[in-house]
Length: 124
Image (cartoon, rainbow, N blue to C red; front, side, top):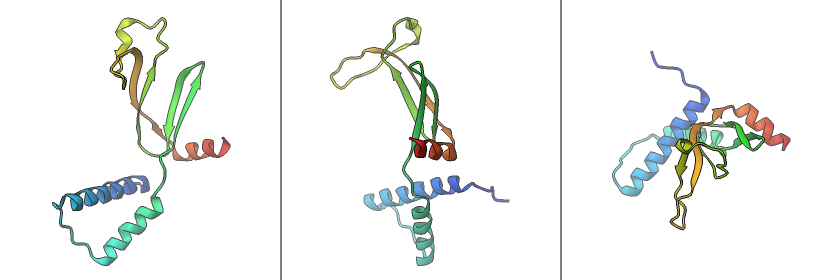
């Protein structure tokens, strides 16, 4: 039995497929035969779900409390204000000028909360 996917999952799969097809054609290595109906359905689905990635970063007292987005997204948080931070929590961060100042940094995945993100963007 096929796994039921959410509309968000379908959109991500279709967008990735479209990118793969485009890159393949640019490289001349992919030959895909789609009926006109398949192509139009895929194109209409992509257009219907096309959206800009929106990310909300909530801070309190200068500290990141929450990160949410309208679609899956990874983020990196870098805080150069490292007074009082233990040395083992600092990371050297490469800069364009070749320097590597230390900062408190971490990566994570935003909570996917499209309705909340839309609500916050409308309120701002």
